[in-house]
Image (cartoon, one colour):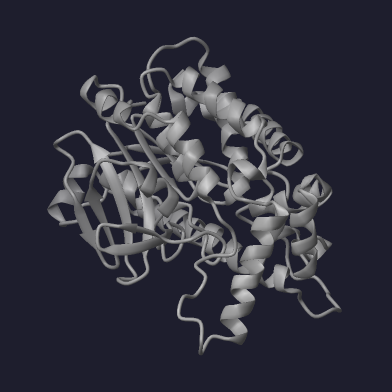
Length: 376
């Protein structure tokens, strides 16, 4: 099989992104001591964008980058991502209460439910963003991109840093913008709506890149990928309808909305890519050129959780700080039907370690497919 450029696409999902690092740890083991970077093209969205940029920073030493990510995710605590102390949660509650009850008198509305300033400090401390440019110059990296959604334009932007020959692109409601990626891009791509505050980049405010992302695999193709490994943060095929009696809680509704944002776009795009591969594969390159069909088959491997991550979150709900548990209990997130919302916010070792282990196991169970994709 031809080599081509391999891309890694990491989707969003808050704390669920720990699963991706478990997959990467298995890939590191499967590759052994081989030098170099197996994924010269790295694309990510939301928390997956943070993981992708971390790998880009360490593109010259893939094994070291994966070890660093695994160490951080294995020891994660919520206070490294957002403030979960009683004082911060009380202040946020008072701001929202004032805005809802005294909106006519209060000019400034609250920007989010949680303060993620600890995440900015963490990213600034552990990532040397200037290393991305050096990796590109030294040939370790072809391109890296993170997606964010513009609140004013409604467009999905893929901010990318790449070799000079990569061109910016524009499609319906989505475009690629060349830039030097920094901490603001990571905070923007991971700004879950309502939960974390939007981030201003140039003239527009941006939120989580999974919003309105109609084609999450598209940036990898625009950046030159011939084969793509996609690591999801949730099961792509969920269970069918089940009988329920009680009225859905706010947490259940919020979890359903977040799953729609993070998971549905990927499923649709994978289905679209499969149809394109069938069409392109039925014709030779010469036939496609003669017919004016500028499509090419893209080899794709998808690894997604074999278990429900919300169920794992439910089993580890008590690992959250007491003040945060109290707040989440009020919206139903500590109930079984609210554990989907919980799974996006549960940055605590019992949950992240369980996801690391699941990602590792799922990948090792498909070792032969991974070896074929990596050409090892």
